[in-house]
Image (cartoon, rainbow, N blue to C red; front, top):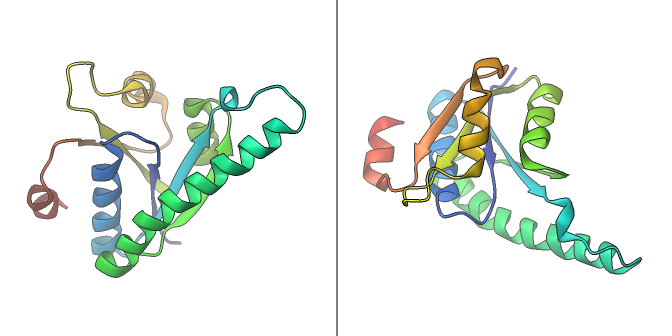
Length: 152
C-alpha cells in the first residue's frame, strides 16, 4: 500500500506551498500525492443548460491548474499525482475523500500568512482535527522554498 498525501487545489496563494511540501514528502518517503479540487455548488447557476457549461468550464480550469503542479511534481520530484474533482461544500467533501480512500495518510493544508487568518479550510478543519481519521500537516504560506526543502 502506498501512502498518499492529500493536498487541496484552490485559488489561494498558500496552496502552492502545500503542493510543494506534499510532493517533496512523497518523493522522500516513496509515497504518492492526491490533489483534490472541490467545485462549490454556488458556482452553477440554476438555468438549465448553463449549469452544465459552467461545470465543464470549472473542470477545465481545474485540469489546467492541476497540470502546472503535476508537471513540476513529475519533473522536479519524480512524483506523478492524481487529480480528484468533487462537487459540494469543501470540508464535507475533503472528509468524504479521506474516508473513501484508505491510502490517504496525511492531509496537507496551506495556511495563509496575511492578517485575515490562516484561511477558511485551515480554520474549519483544525476545529475538527481531533476527530479526523488522519494527521493534518499545515504548511505556512510564506515559507521559503529553501526552508521547505530543509524540513521535508
